Amino acid sequence: PSVGDELKKNAVIAVVIASIGMLIYIICRFKSWKFGAASILGVVHDVLMVIAFYAIFGFTVNNPFIAAILTLVGYSINDTIVIFDRIRENQKLFPKDGSEANIDKSLNQTLNRTIMTSLTTLVVMVPLCIMVSESIREFIIPLMIGVIVGCLSSIFVCSPLYYDMNRSSEESKYVKNMRK
Image (cartoon, rainbow, N blue to C red; front, side):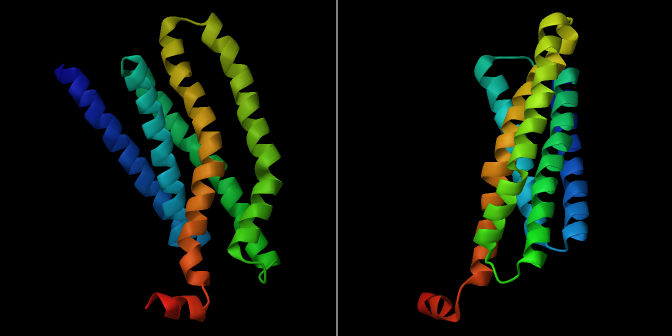
């Protein structure tokens, strides 16, 4: 039990350190805290979904699980950065369009890439899950769940979060005055 507690503590510390490092990088790269906050919230969502899956089905948390979670964090943030990079490009190309139009356009432009990347990754993982030893399977199963959740969260969680964070800065003076 003491090794398990230490393992869980180290896993949480590793995810927190990775999230802080990614947040700093994204804020510097995109020059906006909104991109960073939305992407980190998406990564936290992904990690919590995989942990919830493990809790529901009673799988054990061990070293391969922690390695899979850290791999998932990197995979998920990469997918989100691709979408956010396209949003940033479209904001420069179409400055008169609002955030909603630019986010919608960006999602449509990257949707095929996002889904195909995730499906390709899953196509490789399914045979691995079937043909490998139990120790590798303990790494592959959370990674498979994480790839699915990461694909969905970069589209359905991160982008809407970024939109909600941006919405208040785009309101007209009339709407702002009505709130007062």
